[in-house]
Length: 231
Image 1: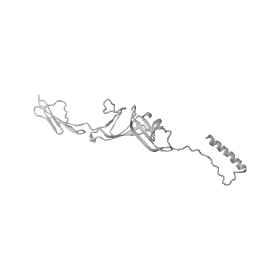
Image 2: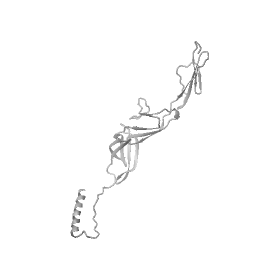
Image 3: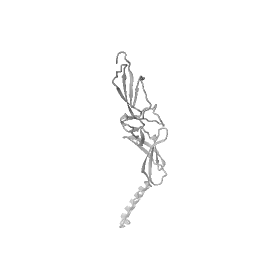
Image 4: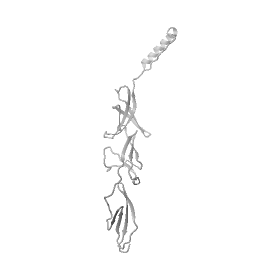
């Protein structure tokens, strides 16, 4: 720069050319979502001397990931989504969680960040689940998180006829009760009648129907009746 010279901004913004005095900050509104624009700034003094250009790529906000799917597991939820594009402009994804519906993340703390398009959200309790057998409520009486699996102890409802039924498990929004995910295990619950074992004595030859053998058989039969009665 010549003595007493003054720099003027000279901006090349993608397909736009702006030459002249500009404030320290500059913005332009006619940009597309998810596009990287190359910015170059060249300073020119009063004598027409140009500085070396300073270049930077500015990326407009990317679209939010689409096709979010929550797959309930034991003790956690598998989240998957479609990646944002263009991929080279994606630094990472941030996952937020709230106990109520939300349309903005303002005031929320990130639950986790990942560079993948999948994530696991854990921290569930028994109260976050409910269950049904053939549409009849089944009580969740216990459970625990074991080796990345959440095991639920479910008491089958009474009053259903003998047969095979589907088990449905629902994950509910904490505090709200709204179902946010569900899973069905087909034909996983079976109702049958209780059967008692009975001892049958078959004497084809008739050798134990009379004499000492018959007396022993009778004593054994009485014992067997006692066992059955006690059961």
